Amino acid sequence: MTNPLYDALFGRHAGKSTPFLHLLDGQIWTHSDFLETAAQIGHVFASLGLNPSDRVAAQLDKSPECLAVFAACAQTGLVFLPLNTGYKANELEYFFQDSGAALILCAPRAEALVKPMADGLNAELLTLDTDGSGSLMDKARMKPRRIDTVDRNRDDLAALLYTSGTTGRSKGAMLSQGNLLSNAETLVQEWQFTADDVLLHALPIFHTHGLFVAANVTLMAGGSMVFMPKLDIDAMVEWMPRATSLMGVPTFYTRLLQDPRFTKSLTAHMRLFISGSAPLLAETHVQFENLTGHRILERYGMTETNMNTSNPYTGERRAGTVGFPLPGVELKITTAETGEVLPQGEIGQIEVRGENVFQGYWQMPEKTAAELRADGFFITGDLGKIDADGYVHIVGRNKDLIISGGYNIYPKEIELLLDDQPGVLESAVIGIPHADFGEAVLGILVAQPGQTPDLDEIKESIGASLARFKQPQKLVLIAELPRNTMGKVQKNVLRDQYASA
Ligand code: MCA
Ligand code: AMP
Image (cartoon, rainbow, N blue to C red):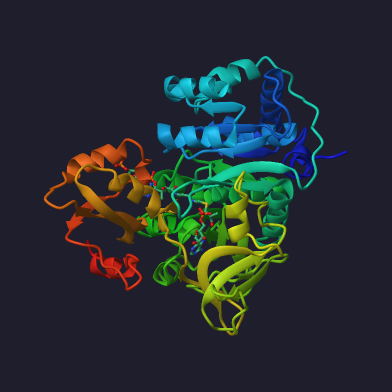
């Protein structure tokens, strides 16, 4: 009897005193330390009466213990539901409710806010802070350092990750053990990760990139991570000479390039820089190579699919492309109208199929059916083409989405809030170019006849219910929204008009 995900990522390291996490204060967590902590947390879960397949919703700051919660969920067959630490009360309440979370984990500072929500849902609530304090570890420290692993198979759910939708309602992407495992196995091979790797880990661990790509790949290869609470260029500069690899969103690379301490010699020990989650400008790619001699390896993925394509480890890493479909991933370019495959070189919607592709949206069969075809192909909503050499290019999006510093923002969610503000008739939210984050959020409002909405008040009001990264950096008032003959708002016209707003 086995638990494929636990065995492959965690169980294989049992009893090893090899380094796993290097903390910025010099502390080292060995694989054993980590697994023992995970087992203790697993005992806490068992003592609360949680059953396999129950959901554990966690809005936690990054820490070794927080990562151990993921390991404990895998070992005890629970479904891990990590949540962006920027989410506000109303956003959280939806995730707790929709997922039917049996246990909620939050920072001690959020306990007073979350407690009534947990009580209302009959969910348990425990707290965890970055220094390991809080009720979770208070209970865990008394527990045994070993626990039996619960049997699971590849089709069992391992995680639920919420991703916003074009209708404004977030959808829980159901990821099975097999989805996560197959992708980690492939990426270790493709990117040649080994036990000698030391990964600079500065991404959050509540999204696919930092958790299922960066951490899972390192775990599977048996390497270690310099585990930074967040992107910190000083720490990056300090640790890079001892590291081998970095995974980041494009903002990581543009910020590094701006720092005079980031030189060719600083990168001498590094073997691989990987970028994803948002388009890396070809210009950044070239600048990076000119300075360091390293070519950034760009790859493409989604919450629903894990990683789909990657530039090659050996072979040409082509700027402005996301490389080739990964082994085990089928990728085709189709017409949105009929779903037929387009001739090579033509632009269409990107569809993917493989063991990496999720099981569907949590309790949303219609949304699942609309995006995940019966034959297993998932319609990504990205627009792309395959060039004559087989490289995949992402040329746009068939979905109304803004990506800011690697975070996805669905305009509809913000428009719904703006439309409800006093004096506002309607609104359109668009992404405009931003030097640091790639895109920034701009809210465009039309006033009700005879009204003059107060933009500062509106900003403050919507700020109370939206994570900071989703809040419009600016609001502007215009006479009317441009529309096509069908009455649809022409966001491309607005994007051109406000490109330098
Ligand atoms: C921080 N702020 C942001 C963002 N991050 N605003 C818009 N977009 C953001 N991404 C706000 C802060 O709240 C703050 O606001 C102000 O900007 C400046 O914060 P700063 O300290 O400079 O930000 P930071 O902490 O340095 O963060 C920037 C960051 C971070 C490093 C780019 O956002 C980040 O780590 N992004 C990675 C996201 C990620 O992991 N994406 C993967 C999703 P104020 O000053 O007003 O308080 S998974 C995915 O996309 C798929 C599967 C894939 O392919 O990987
Ligand atoms: P998420 O919903 O956070 O999983 O974001 C997935 C989306 O991020 C994809 O559908 C793409 O639009 C975008 N994305 C991820 N990687 C890349 C990349 N390398 N280049 C361009 N867009 C990307």
